[in-house]
Image (tube, rainbow, N blue to C red; front, side):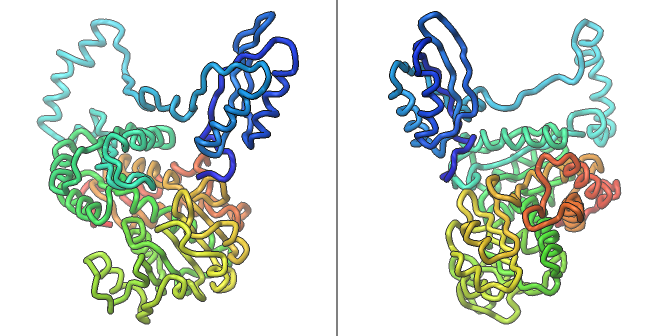
Length: 469
């Protein structure tokens, strides 16, 4: 729940007021007295006796929006006609569409774009399948695939409910990297069916972006698809998050003048994101890491370790700490949370080392209150847009796929992920770097191009034989 009015709960109230009197001047006061924020007030129809006005305002949540409407209705002479939720209006009919890149104005153009001319192109591809990357949308198209089992912070809500999120992802691909992406929402959560479905649709795409598939199924889905396909398979919840965290941590450690090889890092979360973040931090040089799940620290002595947790135990926590998260945070230089809300308090952050770095990335409620963390930590980052240092995957995945597609890459390597993280960190210049600016804005014009260039260079233009990330 938002604590301050947010555009996510923005409404437009269409109402009528008397043309004379004080009603118009009272509208803004009514919204503000209810705790809302007026963002626009438009007269849509004017007469001698009545004015029709659209009042647009931001609320904290749906209940608060209704309270604002009630307050407006209480103004003498006001008649409410319609209340529109602007977020729902944006989604009416979906957020993406297919647009032809070529004109079809006459018979000549139709004959080249479709039959009979298209037959020549099809036969060329039949002789050499690699030409599909050059002569079709495969060159610039990504499938955004989900089973709806782990959507945002909403959980297992199914493929239909996941569709608005996947549409949004596709829109971000287009906006930030010029990539044509399409949502593929599968009505199955069976690993074999997911893998087979993606395998048989893969010829139409240049890359596969797995999205919001719950752990541990997501690990097997990604692994098997990478073995089967000759196009990149990238699970954004894992690797996009990892790239952004490493980039942000690189700059945060610069702010506090520490090195990743020497700091103690405590992580909360051993799922898809936590696993990928850990692997990339270790690849970047981290040596002293403790990972905690809901049962406490992951260590070799636990008898509940599955394959993923066993790998974590084998590569972290060298001293065998077996306590809880609060104990693991003590004296840590860095805390990275990709887990659950409210699992730490400010007093826990106070036990960390001097000039601590806190990444509380659970959304919408972080692992620890950012305000409380700021009282004790030198650098604080969250996944939220209403605090500085937002760790947002849109900083990574558009540029990563732009680079992969440009290189006609067949896979994703750990070297590519590291290169993407370095490039993202370097978008923030030394003059800009500070406790409240360790990652660039998602709208920074250099983000996608810098990440794409780094991935493309790491790929080396090769199209085969990549090792797995």
